[in-house]
Image (cartoon, rainbow over all chains, first blue to last red; front, side, top):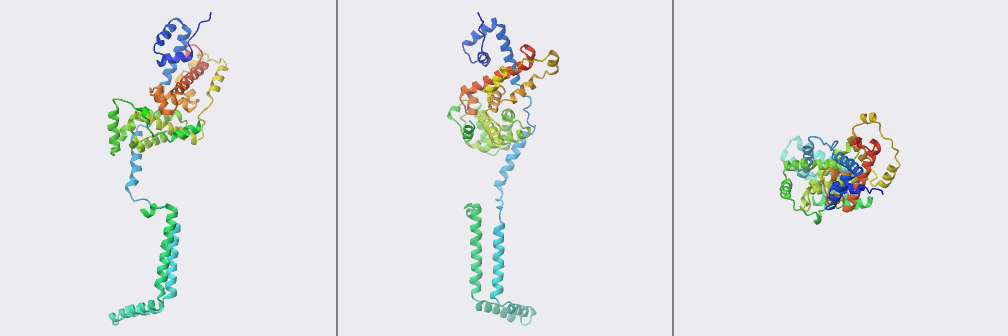
Length: 178
Length: 215
């Protein structure tokens, strides 16, 4: 008649202490069965091997380095928000607006008269009168070309609107809230 | 199963009511976490020191690439730090930290396309057909490092099996705690554990022979 040995699961349950009252029955069988004692000893050795912690070491300063990393990640929150990337288009738009404004001034204003009056002003003869004359000439020139202010203002306004729309498209509404 | 693990990843920072424990150490943990949340950097460093052994067990066992291990350990603690304010003390801190580490590793393995669920049944069948190429005493004398052999065999197992073995034997966690960490039934944890140990024992027997040579 064949001897009934303990199964692998029974041996492991025994070592894990899962069997409650049956622990004693298993222990009694082990007393009388060399084959099962050998199998149990093999599992015991395996359990010891599985408790081996070799190869799990972190650097001695690990905790300090993690704490430092956390601190470094918190730091930016206390600083001003970084300048958003992708400002190239906005910069080009502003540059275009400046050029357009300069062109408009050149087209609508008689710069030669302004230049002459300014030179006269710097010549120093009758300074007060010359200064007033220069201002008067400038205002006169602007007055003659009274659409200059409207044009320049429109260019600047359109530039500002374009710049904001481009920024909104990139960064969302938060840019307006910042 | 892969999809399941991804789905569960969203819940790793949640704290289940079933985790409720009445640990005497809970008051101490609460005080420690409150200090961290108040901005005490020293308290967080102590926290890392306290749990880095557990995290290293999970991470080092699951991640084969040595160069990734320390970074992942750091990532785990950063994730813990960032979510500490949501911890409701309904589970052991160690259980929660291990859960974060486990899912951080799973995420990394999925990203690296490492197979998570190898066919362990095939492993067991292959053991049945292993030839009895036991070492001679002389060979055995040259290869006494059974622990190294055991580590090598563990490394061949799927990550979930390695984790179960590690949490049970190195961190002395119960089936229930491991089930909470890995989000699987307790019976599955026990099944993995028993199967993994049986395979390891058989592989060592195949290598060193059936006697007490490797004992």
